[in-house]
Amino acid sequence: LQKQNYLMSPEAMAALEEFRVWHHALKMDARTMRLNPHFQTAFAKVEGQMLRLALILHLVKQPYFPSLQLDTVQEAIAITKEYIIPAIRYLYTEIITGTRKLKRLENSIKDCILRQSNQPTITLKSIKLACRTALNEHPAYQHSKLLSSVVDTFEDRDWILKLATDDKENPVYAINP
Image 1 (cartoon, rainbow, N blue to C red):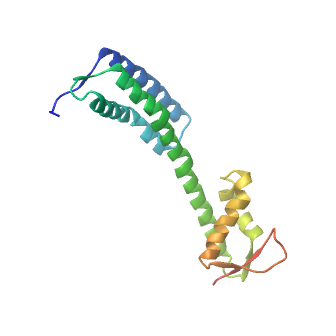
Image 2 (cartoon, rainbow, N blue to C red):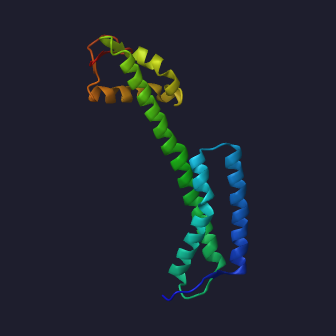
Image 3 (tube, one colour):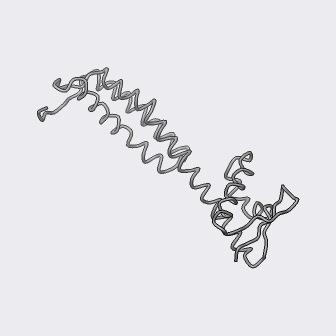
């Protein structure tokens, strides 16, 4: 394939302009709603990603034709709207935010254990009480599971050891000095 410049047909340019208007409106909405700033940065680059995708699709379909056609640009727009944007939204609103919240909960529990390290034991209830701010960042139905999971992690690291007690709701842990 020889080096050449590719242009867009007038119909393809019109489709691109519609996409730009739609994309700009969504960027303004994201800014107004104060969404994750990293999401906003990634979302701002979607137009360029869509154009690169359109060029790749054109090179696959019609590499020797000098102008991108409407159907190729529409296909790139559809892939961008149906896959790329939802993937970016999921990454920045679910995965990254969820990971940060879980890390805050881990750090909160670690701080709680360290504050109580002069005591021989700690209860699950006292951990939950000390970590309620970090815990409340998660849905209420997840609290018990998250707390158990993170406490189990600290037990695996030998920071604490679950003692045999009859109270299943509020187990007691020995703190490893």
